[in-house]
Length: 354
Image 1 (cartoon, one colour):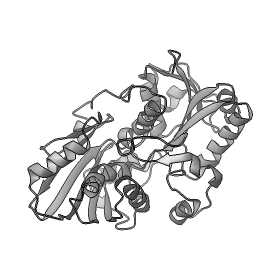
Image 2 (cartoon, one colour; image 1 turned 90 degrees about the vertical axis):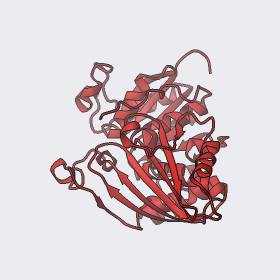
Image 3 (tube, helix red, strand yellow; image 1 turned 60 degrees about the vertical axis):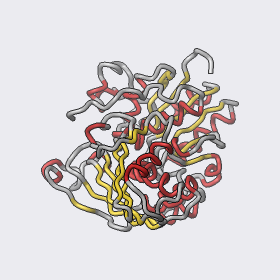
Image 4 (spheres, one colour; image 1 turned 30 degrees about the vertical axis):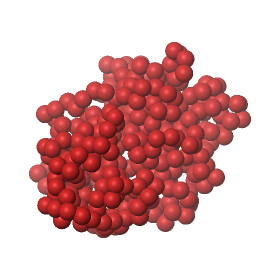
């Protein structure tokens, strides 16, 4: 890429992931934000929906779909970061790409919804119970955790879900180097921001404060996605028995992945294997100390540790669900796709004491 900044548009309006994308784009040295789509609020101030972003976007307003389409179609090479909801994103992205292609423009899409995570429309429809919005586009997308794919073979990228990101970071190494039997048991805890911005019983503060509970045990919709992506990354077909939990904090995910060791193994050997697997990966840190959500909240980093009694292996991982599990992971893919340094705009550490 030249020294000129890359034009970027953002789809997704007023959601939490959109807010994180706006925050990260503002700190990115190579991106030029050209527009933010909100078909329901065109002309409204960004700062009205995201007061904490008012100092960096005091004048920016939401754009209509027509305005965003015109920007993409006239920008030549550009990036589309999509935080639109699943069930909406596929057709929206398809329309923008079609308009751009008609004008000879060449945008690349980085989708954070679920719409392009599966390799077939049938697999998507089996989970989400509605028709895929643009099945002809599916083969133009690759879905993977950035650390698990060396070469991007498609023009567009779908980022895995937040729970999926943490579970894949934990499980793929021990599957790929054959440390564990392919029957894994996962307990994951997510912060309330994982439920989105619209208030509900699970996110209302008096209900969630000082409480923790499981939901959708052994039937969470991320499980088929995790299974498919783990197979692609490790070449091992594993069964994931996943029990998610809602935690009493706003942001972050903690997962514990357990399985039966294929051979006797010590904790030091497990940690060495994890460290070797993620060597030279700037956003994954393998430590002997148990990982804490506070140490990654607000950052694109993942902290991983592990333990074993020689028979059972346990791998623990923490990420920020809105950053590494969503907005930050999408920008990490953008950096790779356009040849920027992978850490561009993403190197800030966690705030700590959140």
